[in-house]
Image 1 (cartoon, rainbow, N blue to C red):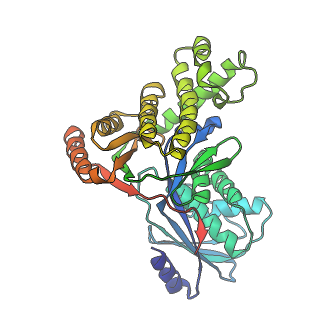
Image 2 (cartoon, rainbow, N blue to C red; image 1 turned 90 degrees about the vertical axis):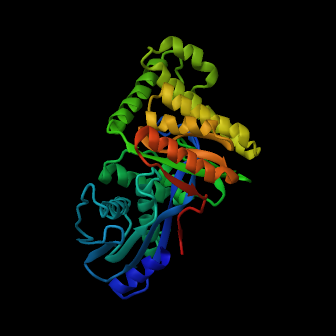
Image 3 (cartoon, rainbow, N blue to C red; image 1 turned 30 degrees about the horizontal axis):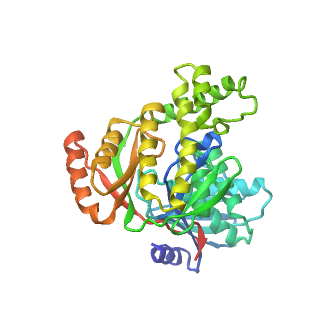
Length: 381
């Protein structure tokens, strides 16, 4: 992909570019905790987005997307992002630079990537971070990784209409090969957790479904968490978010919250704890216990937070029973997308055959399988 991006750039613009790469990410555990300033455990992967860029001494910017086979030109001094269009991510990041007082000028850019579509691997975050990394190098802005992650997040909020947490852009910017990041979404600081999986590997199973209620359910869950915090402040005056409560607080929390709210709060509180315990298990190379935590996470997301669906439950439950699988859970916002599985490398082939057959028979849908490797975060070639 790197060679194709560079070749396309030279062909279109007849000059050598600066080339930046930013990866997609998986989230090992810690789901629906980021917007309660909780803990997550993401890792960057080998798939990502490349951005080739160079100044053009023109009053406008020229962009080309290899994936969409489309060119866009805009005045770099007066532009208006187009919501829902890939060029919005370039203009959105430029707007962040403008607001921060950074100087830039006309440039050419070619963008392309290899992140599997619809798998929930944060292609939009990788796109934004790739663009930011390229522009920082081109204009010698010396942006920190955290600044690039924050500008990318703000760009998605303001121009793409995606109210995401910091996790996706942070993992893309800070990722490191064979390493997970235990990220504190309150302080925006992380601890590196070595991923020594030995004979095991991470395999994603894409359900290839996405139910329409995903967005509305996300907003409802977020609102439920915020309402719970307001009710709990009377008894826990020091709390700002559910992240501030411990497992030991759950009996009292249950007494305070109505039945409609408690399970949602229970998930966030327990999932924050699971992320911390999971990081400790990985540090101690206790993969068996880590696998059990994956199962617990899925059960909590399905039963308490109610963001799973019958397809994801089917895939997770089949995986739990399969020899060589230490653990599995749904990954991402829910109502479709992937399960993440920790599986013995020697069992991958029969697992693919069994799951593909049973899932297709049950739902009439062929699942997709994605083997992921934990790679480095954003960088310049």
